[in-house]
Length: 257
Image (cartoon, rainbow, N blue to C red; front, side, top):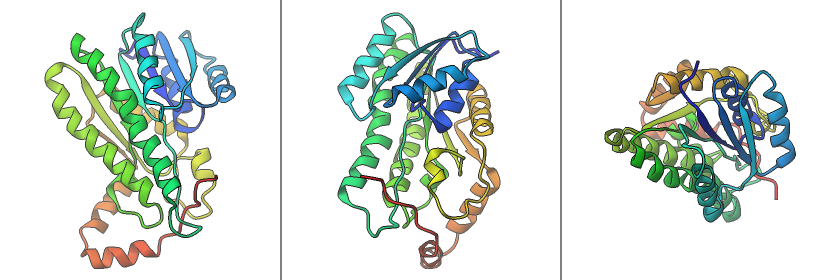
């Protein structure tokens, strides 16, 4: 049985967020799920049928700083959050050419500032009571500079480094921080990719790996390990050679307008 009583997951309407919600609904007492689409959130709740958790849904765009802060405050008025998973994220690439400024901004606003908008308010609460755990969902793409998706890899790198630094910073206050860096996971986000995705993993399995890492308080929850190892080998090569290899990678579709 998990030690978590009150859990918040952003981006819980589909994909990894939904899989995490289903798994944690079996291990928590109160589960707070937020996303932009209420119908999809309701479907997530319906899928948590094997749980006794109280599940609360909220329409929230994590890009909205004030709304995110108010949501944290609203929950904390009655529940002390033990675990917050900043999962909401989007992806876009350069298959149609270069990335537009609008796409870059949308990705950074969601993947970076969307994390900050949730994490910063809860830090204030957790440090005061000297307990709690924060999980930031990054990606193996956060270790490499992908010409096929510059904004995505940069945003995931930013939250990874932020989370790793935050882990050391908050440890003295009794607050744990974990950074999950998965590879390819079967989700709606990856379903649009029309290229081979090595070590593609089911979202349910990915969620179990992440939760296991959370419970063991691993600083980095990286998987598949073989994929990470290959990335490390690649990055040990001269940059000129890495550039040539990276340029041959397939390109991901741009965000839909």
